[in-house]
Length: 173
Image (cartoon, rainbow, N blue to C red; front, side, top):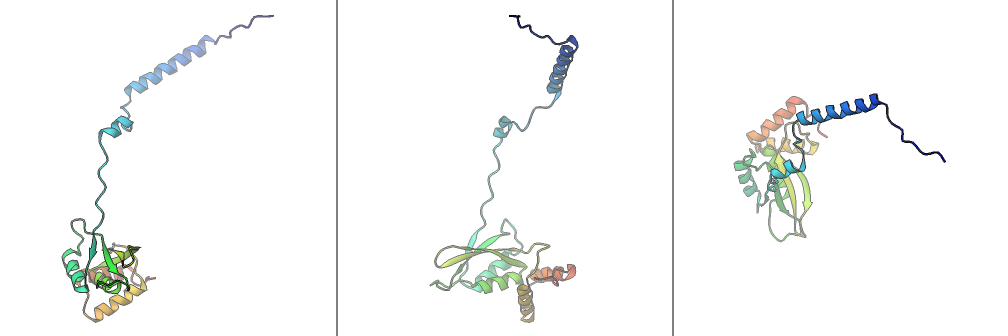
């Protein structure tokens, strides 16, 4: 039986392979260290998450209005609040949803997401209106009544004027 012989590569292929390996080693040595390596990530922990927005309870519309007078500019991280509002079955008196929305509109704020809390309360998110936020026909009508009654505040009127100027007022859904 013939003996298996080992095939050898031509010397040119072996030399090219050696040059490629040498070039790769040179490039690797000249490259900056990999900053995304696990060791680099472990050196500095991620920043802590921001604190959750406050949940506030107001016994009446006057208390919510007073808070908005002081905080409507959204300073010091108070650009988002959750209002704790009593359901119809709630034995305690709180600001109502309609009162809260109307006062928010007066100050340039808007209601957002609603979440169930328990059998007596739900929470409603309120934030300052964003620059390009879209208006609902319902809130356009509410603002009309608030203006007629002389309840709009300068901050709320600024938002209305901006929406009228850029066409969002007429595009209300």
